[in-house]
Length: 375
Figure 1 (tube, rainbow, N blue to C red):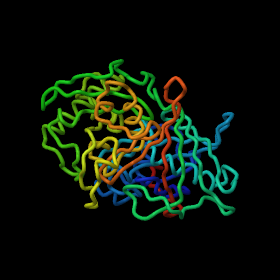
Figure 2 (spheres, one colour):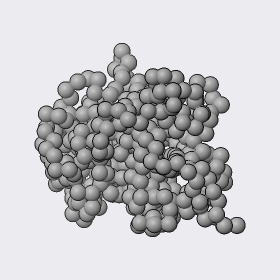
Figure 3 (cartoon, one colour):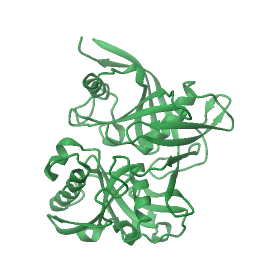
């Protein structure tokens, strides 16, 4: 039998997400997992029988509901649906998909329209953090055309500003889950210096020079030699154990592919992006790469960028040592699709208050999704 549910396919930042109302998906966890797998067409490398795009950045679901909490307009749960495995990961958040929530809430009438900007206060249930979206709107609802260009997305769109408030400690282990600014891990390529940070999502960053790579690569498929990819998985496994997600590093791939994420950093250097354009070293404060579900991200995971920005402020960290900041209020990250600027607000004592990012988002299609479910 088929279950029909209203659904909206949206691009949010550099991701594509299927956005639905939470009330329209099964409440029981196992039934919900099967429902999301069927809706996206997983497991299948092409996701030919579902709404997924065959890559991790286009196999994401956002489930939205009105909030009854004071000072919160809507809540959402993010689901990373594996492409090739029958697995749905609810442990982390997606910053790019977060940019779909505000426009969706306004368009669906969950938040009244205010011009020229509607503020939407959003609670993410995965990380239990507050996000405030400043959505450009007119009398008809969310605006989608504008002059903001973001790396990794062709053309321009209406600028939406997202503020992630107090993003640290999403998993209950503090800003530095290992309590160390730097850890050294024995890997397939030798000792690797890492900094494990939890802000917006838990991400462990390694020094490119320790891995024996340039850190400027842009090809997302089979990019690094086998021993480098093995070393990165060993680094990620170390972080998974520190979070209590796995008992042994080798279990990380089985229990959680989405988090913790793993990134690579180096001092700013010129390179050519995936479009063949020159990215000058002077336009970056740090050059970085991040993996998404085991594959090099074609741009940079937004929550990973916020974790990197938080790590850059920790003296002595691997990220801090790789960063040459031009401004105390912004960090510019060089990634495979260009440059991503992240804003930061600090208290008078220097502690992190919030991280901000401009994104564009738009509806691609709205209608009814037909999902095969067991009777």
